[in-house]
Length: 288
Image (cartoon, rainbow, N blue to C red):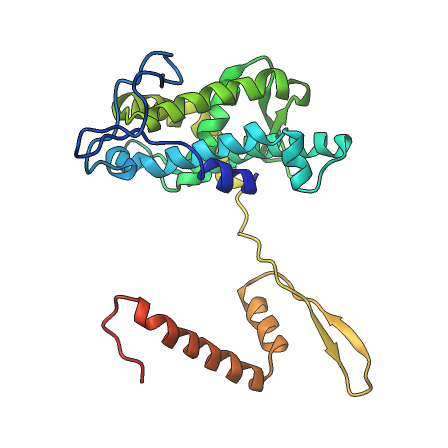
């Protein structure tokens, strides 16, 4: 998902522009709008940019577009082979997990929504994931279901289900059509229509606010991956040293990994790199 998101998501999609000489970077006689099928009717004029025109919506809109590319292309055999999944049975599992993770992310993303002052999203990726969840739910046909259950601790919990048999018949066509619309709005600088469309899926109504309450109640601290160390005693016996979760243990693992002599070399290397980079930075600083 990450590879497709970054390379073919953010790395694709043309912006139609008109330069100061009145020339276009596309053939107006042959290029048609992805959604309407009619000739392109709007574009970016001189000095206009994607971020400038779509302003506070640009990041979430773009992250959503890239995520859509990721799930849409994740079932392509050539893509699966590139990422080490040529076996069909294994590939089918990867495809299912990828779509399911995206649906779950849409629910978990509610943690980053603030209902105060009319409701705002505090994180672009989270808003993007929620929008995709709304699109998949809108597709219906039992593609995605969210069950409100009672957890083993007796407290409210949620279960997200995705029907893997409907990925190719429902999920992919639905996200494909949605992606077409996102790309059309972005390419043609259709700000008002694009904003209205995207914000309609970003709305967190009473139902999703109820789910948000459960998500918040079930929130756990962010996990920290801490690399284990190997230690050798005076007798030459080697043992593995593992660490529990938390910032203090992260610091301890680094202290155990590097000697005082190592720290000196690391600090010197960092300063040397800083001095090499300094001429490339527009900073009024002097290194002493």
